[in-house]
Amino acid sequence: MTATLTAEDERYSELFDVVKETTAHGGEVFGDLTPGMNALRNKHPVMQGSLRELLELPPAPHTMYENERPHYTLLNYELCNRALRENLLFSSEVYEESPGVRQLGKVILKMVGDEHMRYRRMVQPMFIRPKAIKWWRKNWIDNSVASLLDRLETMARADLNLDLCARLPVSIVTQGIGLKGDDALTFRVHLQKSMMARTLPMEEVMQAAGEVSRMLKEVITARREKPEDDVVSELIQCELELEDGSTRLLEDEEIFSYCRLIILAGGGTTWRQLGITLYQLLSDYQNWEDCKADRSLIEAAIEEGARWMPTDPTFPRLVKEDVEVYGVTIPAGSRVDMCLGAANRDPEIWDNPDVFDLHRPRGKQPHLGFGMGPHRCLGMEVSKQEMIAAIEGLMDRFPTMRLDPDAPEPQLLGGLEQRGMSVIPVILR
Ligand code: HEM
Image (cartoon, rainbow, N blue to C red; front, top):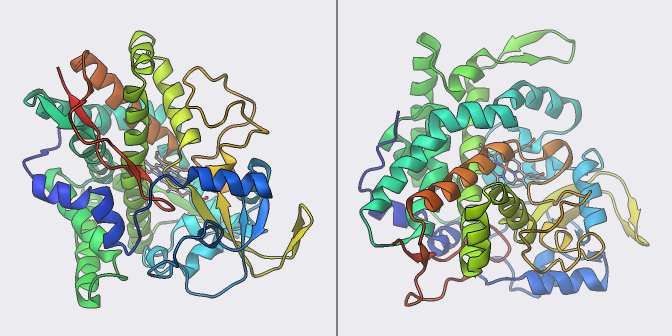
């Protein structure tokens, strides 16, 4: 079943322009801040202040988190890895203070400990590697890639950022949930608006949130009557283990929350990470040729991309007890920024960490681009399969594809949140 990715170009370019998206959410568009992050890490692995303050960026136009708290930033691999793993001490409850995340409802992203484990364990089987390959790829990934590449076949030049990277993940996750064709795009429009409380009138935000619920409710009701082979049908059958060991089925509101989280977490991230990796491969053409000749290198490229330039360079946590690290006491009640952008370039862990090295030996320490510990990205294997399928598909269909030398130079935009390429202009044949 192939998505009808019709000529929705205006809506697509509105929705998937990195600059427009960032500013619509009240964020700013900085270039590559990695050198600044590296310099901070080299000064000291833990510093007082938010990452934004430490990088001497102007104050954010809108607050991401409601409560004023003492703020610290963790910058090396050891500390970020520890904070990600020790979730009772460095707590994900911090997301409860973010209006954007709060409106997603009861989501695993902000749960901790036993509750998080019970809610996550139940859905994990849908996202493990074999399922990503046999279920996600077969049902939605391969078809979506094929239909987008069919569209590219009609073009001589393209912007892979908009024409492929942006469209693919949203198509896959929304279809995976159970929305069909153009409904998927309409859903994305509403979901985006429902998250824009910082920049849109409240009435518009509430109306969009209502549409999101209505569309999801329709899918849930339909699947309760007649299950299909999709995520909502699986969620309806999931049995949540309760504290006393008994089990119950999920309520509609809990299913809504899972769907909203999966669509939000899985859309923009994979788009931008795929773009970063594709551009990196094409701009050093030997890398592209190497991957073409040995397809097993594509996964290595994806891992290296997520190490070298994780699309989200920083994640927050709430410190629950006083903790001393490298001689600095972080008091209970502080917020910490875990700067994964700097941790993933830690020279204690990787040789020549600033180089994107396709042939880098896989070390003992995994990168932190998909997080680590209990909240490590649930959709990691799905997103890797999406990226593998897209890159392989391009290599098969357009073996001589290359960057367009006459187009404007692509730039990395986004800065502190949601980094991605401005454009990836290619000549297809
Ligand atoms: C390249 C693409 C992606 C990147 C870089 C990425 C990165 C991350 C990171 C760093 C976290 C941890 C957040 C934290 O600890 O606070 C996370 C969590 C999560 N991701 Fe992803 N993600 C990607 C794609 C996806 C996809 C495709 C899906 C769904 C299909 C997804 C679903 C989730 C969910 C549900 C969580 C929350 C897990 C939990 O709290 O237990 N992600 N992701």
